[in-house]
Amino acid sequence: MDSRIWQHPIIDFGERKGREIYFNFNGKPIKAYEGETIAAALYASGVRVFGRSIRFQRPRGWFCAIGKCSSCLMKVDGIPNVRTCITLVKDGMNVEYQDPRPNLPEKTEFECEHVKVETDIAVIGGGPAGLSAILSLNELGVDSLIIDENPWLGGQLIKQTHKFFGSKASYAGIRGIKIAEILLGELRKENVKSLENSSVIACYREGKGFKITAVKGHSTLYEIDAKGLLVATGAMENMLAFPNNDLPGVCGAGGVQTLMNVYGVKPGENALMVGAGNVGLIVAYQLAQAGVNVKMIVEAAPKIGGYLVHAAKVRRMGIPILTRHSIKAAIGKDHVEGAVITKLDENWNPIEGTEFEVEVDLICLAVGLTPSTEILMQIGCEHAYVPELGGHVAIHDKFLKTTLDNVYLAGDVSGIEEASTAMMEGKIAAATAAIDMGVNVEKAENLRKKSLHELELLRSSPFSKRVITGKEKVYSLMEEISCG
Ligand SMILES: Cc1cc2nc3c(=O)[nH]c(=O)nc-3n(C[C@H](O)[C@H](O)[C@H](O)COP(=O)(O)OP(=O)(O)OC[C@H]3O[C@@H](n4cnc5c(N)ncnc54)[C@H](O)[C@@H]3O)c2cc1C
Ligand code: FES
Image (cartoon, rainbow, N blue to C red; front, side, top):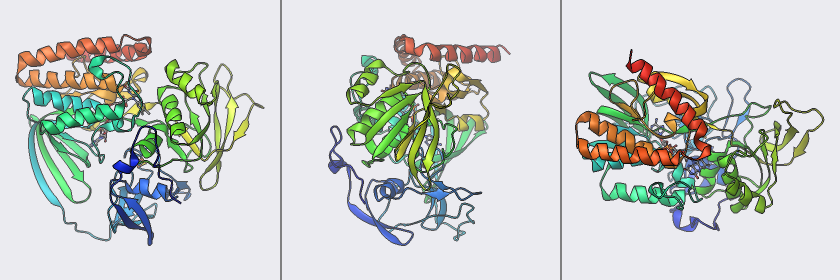
């Protein structure tokens, strides 16, 4: 079996894929292409079970495809707990299923390069927020470094084949993948310092600055000393509670988009999309573009949550959108074989007798995101639960300062929104950091003023009402804390 996509209306996968290589999976050779992750290559070869649960040994597949959920852990070259969805495959590599309760690695000593780095501002996360921030810091003359754990910089942009809305300053009318290319082009041109495929695993305050530990695979350990931090770690996809929700084939919609649009692997034959917000609508359309039969989109709310222009495109492709419907259970033994759908009453309860089954091998969940705020929590920023922003967020002001000196945030980690607003927040946070450091203050103030204005324009649509309410809550909490 080979479910790689070669013909696509927007992406030339032939050009994207590197050299053909082979690696071993449980002793058997598997074909892959350089530039693919282990998980993408295994999925393309028909592997669906990536591990087993600890207690009941239930099969587990991948879910997020960006390193955030740990459902794809395997043993790679003797090392357990490797996130196969963000680890690039290498010729001759040995990949195995691991015991759900793995022993410590057979090897007790690793050859590991220890690299010390010093910088004024460390930007953690290379999505639209982090990229805009580092480019602005660079322009303002602040010594800075960007760190990202995925193999490619660009965050969620690198999988978004659709054209963006927004303003000219936020690249309206341009496809997400092209926006990533533009930002990365500037980064390379400016020779900005970056650490790719490197996870920040710890961050501590030390004196007036910060000590950051990052690891690149199992070969390099970075010890980074920074005077300030700008956290732009994005978000993770939400799970939904229903029987069998852990079956391989129940995936995050963004994860499916990564597999399909970054690695060119067809995620299934027949799909169900749960959620008709923008993510659900866009990914359903892109699944159909990749040749997947999307049987339907179910949406628990009485109305479609996403832009109607996206809904119209989906409907034109013949995909029905059922509002006031949800998934009741997934069906299958080792992998999804179907789903039970139910109608909901006005109190969101299933209406008995309305259930019906759909035959699908893929269930995509597009039911919201939660800010990835672990690093900000670890260093001690005060947090608040703000449902309008997607969950717990670090309390901050409109200049993206947190409750700790010299710690800033931007993008989805500050509240779930869009790439366009994430880019503006990245610029504002960078300008604030420069102002606080006393570097190029006048230029930074101008950039901040302009970006705050752009952000206000972006948030002027009725879709932003919820976010504005959430942001007002955190700003007033910040004010209370600042006033003691
Ligand atoms: C399917 C889908 C469609 C979308 N469509 C649109 C659209 O049309 N228009 C729009 O404006 N927005 C859209 N969005 C939203 C947009 O993608 C996000 O709002 C945006 O990417 C947020 O940017 P960010 O930089 O905050 O986070 P991300 O893009 O998620 O980037 C965060 C980065 O941080 C890195 N990271 C996280 N933790 C660590 C760590 N510990 N160490 C190192 N690196 C780390 C990650 O690897 C990642 O690269 C869409 C989102 C999805 C899922
Ligand atoms: S961490 Fe690999 S699928 Fe989520």
